Length: 130
Image (cartoon, rainbow, N blue to C red; front, top):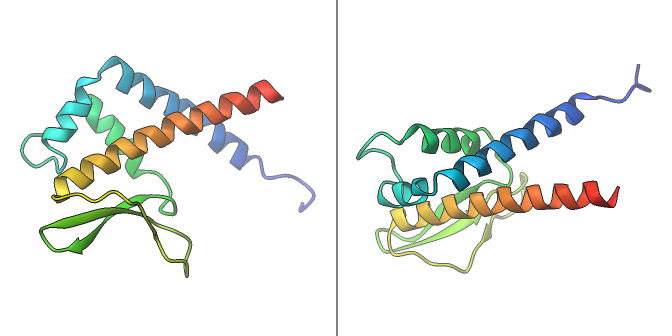
């Protein structure tokens, strides 16, 4: 049995790519969700629109390693973005600094969108190369 390759990773990659394409389609066809998130990054002032909720759900289901979080340098005055690494490795901090937690949360949201776009672009380039 160990000679048989595990095809579940192939299927996960296939369906995850379809989901990334769907997320980018939502963002491109409903750009107002970017402004909506900027106005209410915590989501407690109003319930997010269905489109923003779908994007949030996708980001939340991603594996923990590689996710971004907000690092508080000075409470209530200075925040940065950090990336979760493997166990035993220190997180990587970005150079950007934010005055409020809400600004930092929106920056994480934009960074995640950029990452999804980059992943799709890289997948397309790999397909062209093959």
